[in-house]
Amino acid sequence: MKDSRRWAKLGLAAVYMTTFVFCAVRLRSGLERAPIYAVSVYKRVDWWVLSARCTQHTGTFLTVCGKNGELYPIENISPLDDRGHTLLANIVALMKPTPFDKTAVVRINFWINACGILILSLYLWFAGLPLAAIITVYCGSLFEIPGPIPLADAMTSFPGEYCLSLVPAVWLIHVSRRNISRLALASGTVFGFAALAASFMLREALGFVGIGTCAAAI
Image (tube, rainbow, N blue to C red):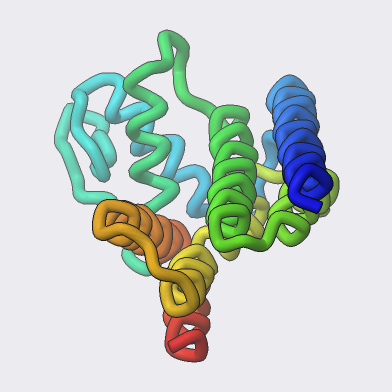
């Protein structure tokens, strides 16, 4: 009986690792095709690009460069937008040797989806829900990378942000049912609520979904 359970666990682990490979293949394909998706619906994407190019010239974050070299806070130009995408664009722009463009925004969106899916699945796995973890990676990779709306706009990354918002709820349910070490409790809590904070930064409304889910879990 013990041997059969051990082999079953090893089989599930092998399948789980295979879904990671599948996710990596889907992500690589999406990143390669990113230029064909480099269009946007909303003006905010243009502000992200302008801020990122300003970062490349000045090294400043969350700013836009004026015609004469002035620096303006991004809030002066786009006051109602969430700042997560702008900040990620700024960080990526520092590492790009070429001018930042909408193709880079598309790739950021794909990375957000992939990271959100994988992080949520890892928490499900450690919470003792291996089948849920496997389904999350497989279905998330299949349907959300590049996703039904592959654009440079924020809506493309909504699935990944939603996954991030659910992480602390999964963790709270896990710790309420099992006795774990203090180190595991602290690290899982820190990373779980960091995922929620990232969701808030990227899309505040989805962050509140995570808060509501946590409240229901408690």
